[in-house]
Structure formats: C-alpha cells, structure tokens
Length: 469
Image 1 (tube, rainbow, N blue to C red):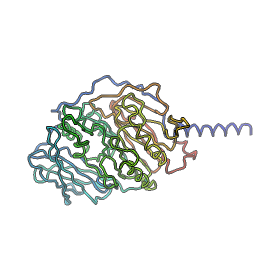
Image 2 (cartoon, one colour):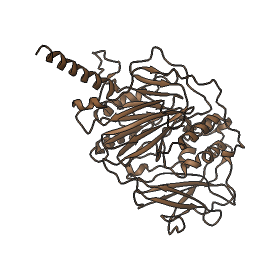
Image 3 (cartoon, rainbow, N blue to C red):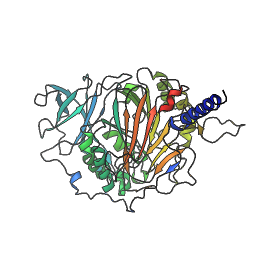
C-alpha cells in the first residue's frame, strides 16, 4: 500500500503535466536559434520571367480560382485580358481533358486608379460541380485559349481528411519567389489559406497598379490550379486621398471575388466556407467590427451556425494577429481581440491564422477574457478552450523580416522565429490534425516547427487518453 499510493500519485501528476504541457502545445517558450543570413528584401525586376505576359492575342493572364459557394460545389474562375477589347467571359470545362462539354458565362469589370486603367477583369462561377473530381477548364475563348485544371474538395463530412497550405504577406520579392516555390514543392497541400497582403502595390509611387498585374502573373502558377481562400490585409486598403483615391479596397475588390453572399455576409471582407471537415471563417481586421456593426452581427450569427458534428475543425483567418511578441504591429489586434475572443473560447475555435507581422510565431492555448473592472485579471492565462494563434506573415515581401522581438518571451508564446516560410495544416480525421511550419532554407520535408492538434469539440478533454498526444 505504501508503494502503490506514491506510484498512483506520480501517475496522476504525470498525466496532469502531460495534459497541460502537450495537449495544444509541443514546446514551451522557444525562440529559435536559427540565424538567417542578413539580406535586404529586394523586389524582382519588372522584366523577370515570373512576370512574363503569356503569348497570343488577348491571352488570359493572372488566372486564379477560389471556392464559389459555401459547400465547395462551385468555383470562381477569374482572369484578366489587356487588349482593347475584353474578349469572351465564357469558361469551357469538363472532366475529360479533351472534351470540355460544359460552359458557363461570366462577366467582366474594369476600374481606374489615379493614372492607371485596369484590363478587363473576368469572373465566372462554375456551379453544380461534383465533389472530389478533377475538372479541366479553358478561358480566352475566341482569341488565345489557355487551359488549366482544378480538383473539387470532397463532400463535407466529419472524418474527411484534407490538407491546407498557409501563406501570408507574400509580395513579389526574390524571397516571395522562394516561398512560393518552396510551397509548390510540398506535395500535400490542396488549398491555400491566404491571410492577407497580396501584391504590395501600395509600396510603389502612386500605388502603382501595374504591380497588381505583375503579382497576378507571378502567382498564377499556383492560383490557376489550387483555390486560394482570400483574406484582405492592410496593403489591400489602397486608400490614397492625396491622389484622389478615397474608395478603400478598390483594386482588391475588383480583382479578387469571394463567395461572401453564400454565407449571408454583406461585404466581401468577411465570409465563411466549408471545405471537407473544416469550417473556415474569414474576418476583416480593417473593416468595422464594434458591437452592432455588420461584421459583428454576422460573426455572432455565423458561429451559431457551425455544426461541429459535420465540420469538427473550426479555423479562423484574419490579418492582424491578436497575440504577437514582436515589436512590430504590437497590440494592433487588441481591440478586435477584446470584441471577439470570448466567442472564440466559447465555441472552441481550433486555430487562428494571421499575418501582418513579417515573421513566424505560434502560441500556446491561452485566453485573456477573465478581466472585469474590479478583478485586475488582465493577463493571458492557459485555457484549453482557446485557439492556438499562429502568425504566418512570413511570405517574403519587400518590407523584409520583423526581427525585433519583445524580451523576455511572453508565457503565451510557444515558438517564434524571424524567417520566411509557409505552413501546412493536415486534417487527419475528426479528432486529429498535424501542423508544420517550413522555413525557406530547408527542404520541403523538414518541419522547423510542428504540432499535433487535438479537437476539443469532439472528445472530453478530461480523458487521460489525451496524454498520448
């Protein structure tokens, strides 16, 4: 009896320690020792191969696709033509490469920004697609035809495996090209969750919108085949009253359509989609979100619609991070955190991906929602109902890396590193997902940071079986 009691106590303590230390985290307070060779971020020259205009009269360019409705049975196809006539907005498509027997008619739009006039920007939605099916499609009908393909997601269900790539703050520097190439060499990802800041055109004189065109051609090698789920960042605002441009998000809104209406949203900056076993909510860090605003009211109603028995994984995308231990954009996400964090904890959001800070960081599961005016509880505390917060604003843009960290490293920060890279979120089933972050300097099979996610909405967290994670 004297021996059994300490052994059982030790086992209980061990289970508690492992539960607290490994469920929702893989390490504690690590600042990576990896030292990236100092180098200034430099944009690729305008005549780079990756910006080349495709040959042929009025050839479609900047082709990109995104999910076209809430459940993944539709796809929005977008492209640009730049001759004096728009050309056709029709898409031919089908499941046989050599017999595109279906068609859908789209529409085109144009816009002016200061001294720039866009090409014809076409958007066409393909509807009633079969799930888990490879489709071939052609654009440029009547002039120069270009052909591409995509694969629709599996039908929505709780145990449907699916793999997402994560990229943010990409830009069009030499480092951006390395990031995209590195991501493309990773064979697992099926869809990119993009957390904002696309072209960085606003960094050029008069927000030179030619750099929206070069960026669209640069990323086409991925965006024409894999859907990218778009989040608007601060570099998409393009608000420039000094040159007479007072309509926010004008270039982004014309170029990058999203299926916001299918989730009841009133604006394309906040919306949701279901994909396989994941429910993905996109929020707008630079649109109003205070109480009674459209975004606030939409999110409150949207969270109530999430059925975790159908889509057990709840993922949120935004641009400005809520938990950030770099001295860049520090506390910029605080007001949104105050508004929405209690909802995230209540609904057991699994993970929040953000960008904005040009570095990498992963948090422990923490919340900062206990404060009231009398109790003084105003610091983050461990909370297994809270999400993991991941900052992935490390795509490689011309502004360069954020390398000035707050010291000491806050308790909520699990791992941080000032490097460029991308991430992979691989859903295995309703209970487990595996997350990896890949720095650009490593091979695609190397994970510089990793974590097993355990879905807290599916099984009781108090079960000691969680200790095996």
